[in-house]
Length: 242
Figure (cartoon, helix red, strand yellow):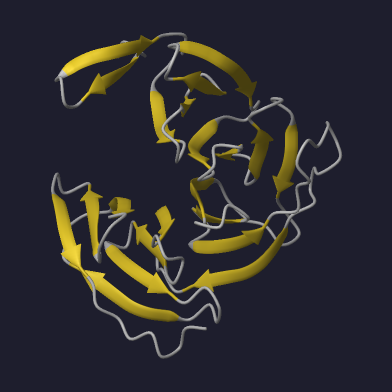
């Protein structure tokens, strides 16, 4: 692997930037909602934040036990990372300070392999090899300095039902549903209010390693170890929604 991140201009079909600096394989990428920044997580145990406008590295953030996944908040103000040490870390992108560390006693019991922010930017979901998904409420004041918010978030919901590792999590753009993909080959929809599973989809012949909703309609895509990507349409009753 060449450990680089090419950023493409889709309309022009040309490479706009090539970000270099990671020293091992890159496991995860995520754009900020405003399109200004991109976060990357690598086997070199770092999270890097890049500025797409000027093509420069903004911050390098380290996790001693290794990075598995990254996610940016919709407004680009925070970047979160899951780790082999069972925790989720959240940094303020304007300062580079660590402001949250989400972990035991209410946290995961095994490595965290997926994280995603809710559309409101205040909540976050995480999926783990412990077969659970957790919904966290962040408690970070804007402009926090080191130590002010660390371990301040709380787990407000745990979703249980997958029979194997949870490898991918996300929320629908309206925030009404938590979605998850697992090594058990299933995709589940969860009610974030009750924590109950609402629907389970099967179709892949291997682990579901990626789940991503469309930002504009009731479509979502899944990627699997069976070497296939699938596009699904969902229609769910909203009677149980607030």
